[in-house]
Structures are given as structure tokens and as C-alpha cells.
Length: 258
Ligand SMILES: C[S@@+](CC[C@H](N)C(=O)[O-])C[C@H]1O[C@@H](n2cnc3c(N)ncnc32)[C@H](O)[C@@H]1O
Image 1 (cartoon, rainbow, N blue to C red):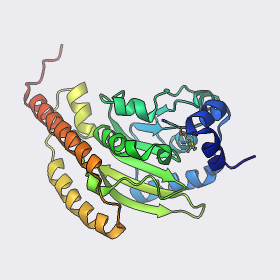
Image 2 (cartoon, protein in one colour):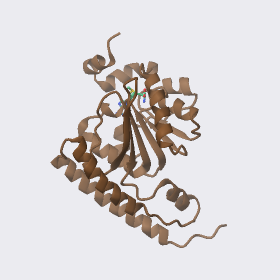
Image 3 (tube, rainbow, N blue to C red):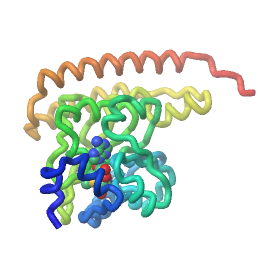
Image 4 (cartoon, helix red, strand yellow):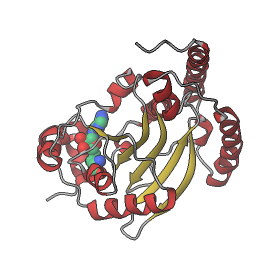
């Protein structure tokens, strides 16, 4: 069989998965299992609500179930059949592009995992996708066979907490959100009860941004482009708007329980 990379080049990513999606299996699965388990040992993931983005046939979902996660939402536009067959429940069929359009805007996750997939996205869409993700999850875990995707720290959406490459040559990167206006706990509190909580997340975010600048210099990341700067301005405006809304919500008097 031809290597997947050659098939991507020959047919295009979308056509490849449209044809092969129902039979998809990742030959690097062992490295993924080890990578997630090692990551959990180091960073102790918050397993309360996970999104498995571009979930394939459930490679990451199965590991997260194994380490104790009880709430996983998975999505992939092409591999629903293979996922159901292997994992036993349905995944959603949303794509990266649907997320950019806003399908998950009202959701909150404690962690988003994207394994062996984000490097497939067109580079021009990476900043907007990752910024969107930073609004809906506290943490992001990327597993990749490459150095890509490069989520630039200058975008100020995700803070790189740590990174390692395991023996099976799977690269694992763990990020914390710099955009989230309410973390998962506050979201739960505001939407499911009326407990008001204080947050010191603003201070920690500023600290993280300062640290990001140092990391960016160290990693010698490619410079932020003009287009990215424009997108960043839009995202910052959106963040301020959401921040304001969230503050107003916090001020609202708790509704009486019926
Ligand atoms: C190499 S597979 C990785 C699957 C799985 N996460 C894993 O670790 O094995 C890449 C996945 O990206 C999905 N994919 C391709 N284009 C996508 C898009 N535009 N949006 C979301 N997922 C996409 C494919 O369907 C495929 O399942």
C-alpha cells in the first residue's frame, strides 16, 4: 500500500478520507496511546469533558476512556462509521471549518485533544481555528508526527505548557488557553446554578503572555504575518466583548430556585 502522505498528495486530504474514512486505522496508534498516557502522568489532565477533534476511528477517545474519562464528545467529518464500529457510540460530523464557522461556540470543554490531524489543515486557517478553540476549552493537547501544526505564541491564544517526543516519535504538546473568558468551572456555575465565583484568571493570563514572549524567542517561531495580525485584532475584540458579557452575567442577581 502507498504511504498515506503520497495518497494525500495524489488524491487530496478530503478525497482520501471520503474514500478511506470508513476503514481508517492509524498505524502509529501505539505511539498515540503512550503519548497520551505519558502526558497524563506529567500534566494530570482534567478529564471532566473532552473533545476529540478529528477523532478518526477513536484512537485518542479509547485512551481517554481507559484513563478514566466519562464524558467525551468526538467529531470527524469522514470517519463516523469506523468510529462507531470501534468505540460503540456515534461521533459528530463537524469539521475544522464548521468549528471556524461557530458550531461549538456555546460549548465548553476541559480539554480538546487533536491527534495526527491539525497539520492537515490549510496553514491560512490555523490561526482562526486555534483561536476559536481557545474560547471553548481550558486546555489543548496536540499529538503529531511532525513539527506542524505550529501554534505561534505571538497569536496569544494558547500558552505552551510543555512538549515531548516519545520513543515512537510522536510529538506531544500541551497548551493552556489565554482566551477563555470563563473557565469550565465558572461556565458550569453560571449556566447550571447561580453560584458566583471569583476568578484570578486575568492575572495568570497576563503572566502567561509575558512568558509566551520568552518562549517565542527561544523557539524561533516564524514571525506573525500581517493577515494574522488582522485576525488577532478581531479575536481580541471578540474576547473583550465576551469578557464584558461574562462580567454582566456575574453581576446579575441569582434567579430564585423554583
Ligand atoms: C491521520 S487521521 C487522525 C485520526 C485520529 N485522530 C488518530 O489519531 O488516528 C486525520 C483525521 O483528520 C480528519 N480530517 C480530515 N480533514 C478534516 C477536516 N477538514 N476537519 C476535521 N477533520 C478532518 C480525517 O477524517 C481523519 O480522521
